[in-house]
Image 1 (tube, one colour):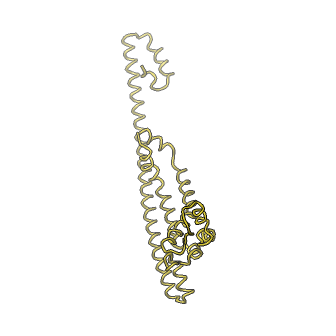
Image 2 (cartoon, rainbow, N blue to C red; image 1 turned 135 degrees about the horizontal axis):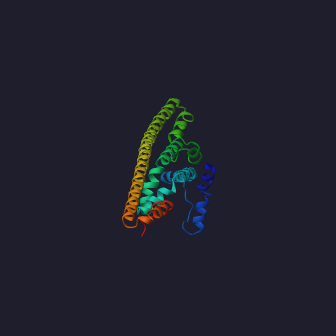
Image 3 (tube, helix red, strand yellow; image 1 turned 180 degrees about the vertical axis):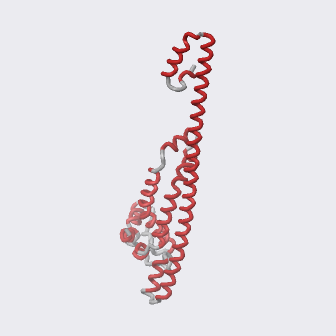
Length: 238
């Protein structure tokens, strides 16, 4: 992919410049890798293009783990599409996003071949990463100590990023534990409410039978048999 982008950004054979010139939008070919800021934007675009499939697959895998019942419950509560995304999708995707961002930072920070093939760190060292700068100082420049120092500094930055990711993962684990506890508590509440409803149905049934005993004692047994055959709560309707 780096060689393909090298040809795409070539000052003489760029397909982007050729297309824009054919459309009449530019008069001369664009030197994508000759200007410092243009070179930065070009390498960023190439790196983003390479990373999109990996990030998209990871986020899709995370979306598949979210239960549709959560969206249905949020919709029943009157949540809008943005609210469902903010309060359901985003919190549940936070662990996946943290892992993806960690890998993305590591891959970009230590990327060597893309920068070395496209610009070799130029123009005017505008596109150097610590990996390419360390190589340039140590091997072509002959300063092994300076190259080793740059590589060591890169290690410190990467360890710091790993610590940040670990803290995020720890917080997500705590949030998951709290969520599980809330779900268990809600389940217990539902069980208690179910027992309470059963008690209320039994009391209502007994009250109806007592009324019938006072008014029509001869049909109490028939009514009792009918109520036993009906589903719970049917006799409350109407």
